[in-house]
Image 1 (cartoon, rainbow, N blue to C red):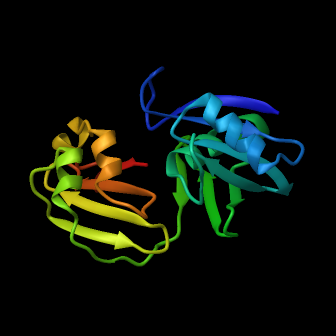
Image 2: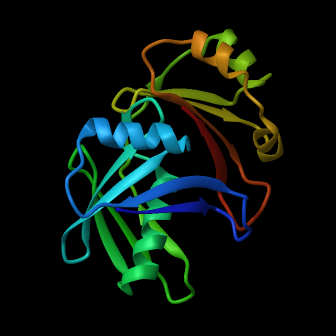
Length: 198
């Protein structure tokens, strides 16, 4: 198994969002993948295995558990496959048999197509907002499929400066996989920014 450490969403070393990408040639047990992810310690480690031409299985593990989807680890996995194989399109199949399609454009940018999940209204507890360091929200939603709370705030700069109290965040809510906080971008090159706290 070859393992790569990739910093997503950056063009500078030791910046961005780190993910481990493990290219497996044989089947690994769930326990082995979980132990590897825990030892690496990144928010996500992706385990990918070629299953057909331009098709790979992909599984994502945090240091604590498997999750069905991770954007920056999919991006990191795509980068490694594109750089090591020369292909320009990939279909990943996740643990729920959902297709995650990526392609490399002529300018080197990677485009990812992800599924859209339904959300419903939710009232986010003040304890969670306090733990995140959020004073006011624009919108709050819940994704029952992924068990993720989504919180929209007014300012991307504030989003970038969030420094959650993770102990308080864990205590603030049960039965979810994480909290996604988003804001409209202050930069016209992007529509929005988000951060995801597992």
